[in-house]
Length: 153
Ligand SMILES: [Zn+2]
Image (tube, rainbow, N blue to C red; front, top):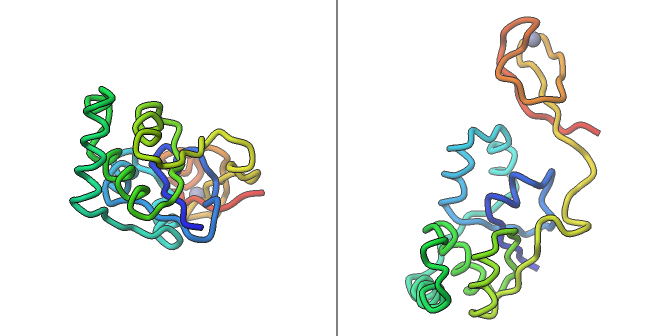
């Protein structure tokens, strides 16, 4: 089963919840804007797809009918349209997206739901000396090099 993921799902999760996960181009821009260190990791396992104009306009119509238009970003609309087009569930905790999804018959799975979050955590390893840290600090206090996210246990 294909799952569509929004950026809040990616911020929240430690790993993808399925083998076939897809997102829209706008989500990558949001991850970049937040300086997410896991972009390279997600890029290796997460597909990107853009919805058609037809599904986009269907979502816009539903959102304006429900009054959610103002609360949905262009990226939110793309995600809903992609989920609609693929007939796939959408992983999101966003209320307006959930509300609009209901109107167009897209199933939403809340990210906070049991089983979605994985148990392991991210750790951050210094590219210079190799020391690892639990927190995403800007640079290594020992040698001043940058850090890279790695899977911890
Ligand atoms: Zn270091």
